[in-house]
Picture 1 (cartoon, rainbow, N blue to C red):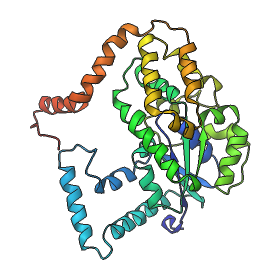
Picture 2 (picture 1 turned 45 degrees about the vertical axis):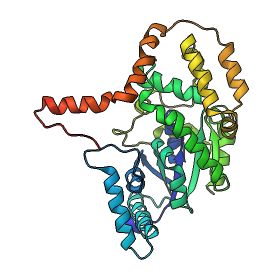
Picture 3 (picture 1 turned 90 degrees about the vertical axis):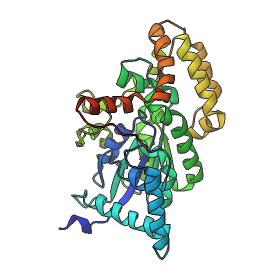
Picture 4 (picture 1 turned 60 degrees about the vertical axis):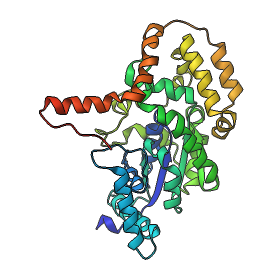
Length: 331
């Protein structure tokens, strides 16, 4: 049978990185009616083809956007025709992933926090699961996973700040068409939480899914989650909920956490299901120690310099120079 003839419904999982999205993807992917693939990222360049901001490249992205917009002016229905073709393309690609007549294709790409609202507007018939996690746990998990606990958040700061705000805004706008779950509820009340999710998806819930989710095999060579490959990634671990309290404990980190919670704000935290004062009290009640403090005295200002000088772009240019290639501006 030609897989392109299958027309699965689309299912999107929206979250920040390090929120437990891989765990959720595997649990949902363990259901016989859900197909999935590891972090497709497919919609990012398509959506950004009409967004002049946020992309640096060897070509002029802003000029490219103007070109696409000019093209849309020739279409009978303008941008609507263009986005309709994007819809058709995405449906065709996702349909080819279906192997066993699954009802849904699940796209779990954490970077979609950039475009969550746009995705919901483009696919109004799809299903949308918003996954929240204590933002302090998200930051802690990020630096532990990728930097062995060192304070190097500069590569993901957009997610922690603007990305989180965009997710909350998208959820508030489309709350009636979506469902939200908290990582902490998945850990402590998995049966009740997943029953609610599968009811929303209009699928039968099988409790054994929670026991067998680790058997879901994804082609994860391009995934940004190193834990997804570990043998011990086979169960839901309650210890992960309070782990941040052992990581964000020196005076510099605690001060940053207080400012971070204030930046998010009581209202946004409430939308996510967290209480501002309770989180603030938890920070203040943790005994301070001086682990990582000397490193942090270096890494805090280093992060500030990174925002201005973009060492990843500089590293790319130095590599080109070593390879005998010409250097060009990124526009």
